[in-house]
Image 1 (cartoon, rainbow, N blue to C red):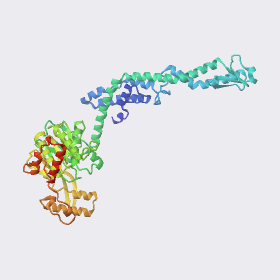
Image 2 (image 1 turned 90 degrees about the horizontal axis):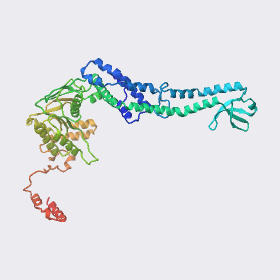
Image 3 (image 1 turned 30 degrees about the horizontal axis):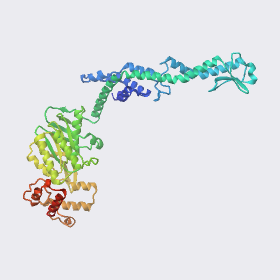
Image 4 (image 1 turned 135 degrees about the horizontal axis):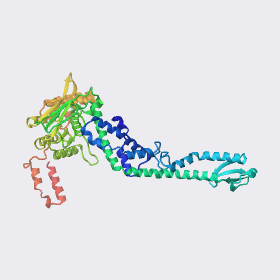
Amino acid sequence: MTESLKGVYDIERLASRVSFGKTNPKDLLQLAATLGNVPQIKAILQGIGSPHLARLIGGLDPIPELAGLISSAISPDAPHIITEGNIIRTGFDETLDQYRLVLREGTGWIAELEAKERANSGISNLKIDYNKKDGYYFHVTNSQLAHVPGHFFRKATLKNSERFGTEELARIEGEMLEAREKSANLEYEIFMRIREEAGKYIQRLQALAQTLAAVDVLQSFAAVAEQQHLVRPVFTGERCLQIEKGRHPVVEKVMGAQSYIPNSILLDQETDIQLITGPNMSGKSTYMRQLAIIVIMAQMGSYVPAQSASLPLFDAIFTRIGAADDLVSGQSTFMVEMMEANRAIRQASERSLILFDELGRGTATYDGMALAQAIIEHIHHYTGAKTLFATHYHELTALEDSLEHLENVHVATLEKDGQVTFLHKIEPGPADKSYGIHVAKIAGLPEKLLERADSILSHLESQDTGLGSELPDRSLQKQPQVAEQMSLFAEGSENPVLNELRDLDIYNMTPLEVMAAVAEIKKKL
């Protein structure tokens, strides 16, 4: 089948060119070649013997009348340009064949006529010449005028010679000039008729294009499934997702099957959300993308990269993976995050799949953590969609105790002698560390800087008050303490500044009075 499809050109594009009257000879030759491969493709599908292929087999219309017309009319060496001739096959049109015969043999006819008249007249230097004014003529010098045959007629007189013509020479000349002028025009007319005839088959060509496209896709699915060892997924009516040893096909292709580590995914009837924790570069995003790709491949009819896969039917996939500013619209990474999260929350159903990767990282820590928790709770209580939520907010792992349909998973690591190895394996439970300093070490940051970061981290982990507490050594002690972030929604009835703001009658004040009042209040802050 693969070899048969190699002879199929972009028939949809060709059909479009036919419908708009834009085809050239090469297009028609490609169309004929494609139609010529259809019977073989049809025979291969019939040989499979599957009733599921009946619709495709029925749609493989070789359009033999059009294929035959093109094959018999268009020369296999035809050029792209339709006004320069050499388009139509010899034998297709009798008049065109005669013109070509004249063009091909006309010069020989003139040479034969010249030799014949030289022998009959005895004029040894008699020859036939040509110019635009007189056309073809016999050139006779004055010394040979006495030998000029009687059937010659004078065309022009020069100082030392005269030019003559004959009826036979005029006939040959007329045929050659006519052939030269009319051959290309006749080929153009014939080609236009063929192109117009091809346009009558446009609906059948478009239907054939769709069928061949479907066959091409299915053949591609089959070839990739065999080459990449994909398996047939099973769809169930239950809200249970189980993938054994799933793989990300693109990452696996780059890394090689030997080094790629597969991961299983289980979201049973009682589990809607997986909260994924683990270090950067450990494979959280790959794990999430792997699930999305497997779902998409399965629902488009392909086999999937896994040992086995049992899936529900999803009505949509919502993702927020990676950071991206929308500079044109003036939207920050965090704004884009919130807009995409909002779209998922409002449009997703319990039949949807949601993938959120480190949502909330684009703003202050407390804001981000609060939003992340609120989003998780909303999905859990109201949406019910199957969700993978990757985060560095380890505090969120405590949600497993209060949300019955949420479970913690993490990417496993191996720590030995101060060295950390990412195992890229998803295991139950929350991660115990972030290993951010180790990732910074991999990135090549200076050793002295890394040691300082490790010292600060150890101190922070031993304190309950966070960054505001006294730090060891020297460098960070000079920095101002980080104040606790003010809540925009806290009650402020006992704050005199807020009371004063509340009492301002701004609707009965001029802009200058409002500015002055705000300036006074600002002095009290």
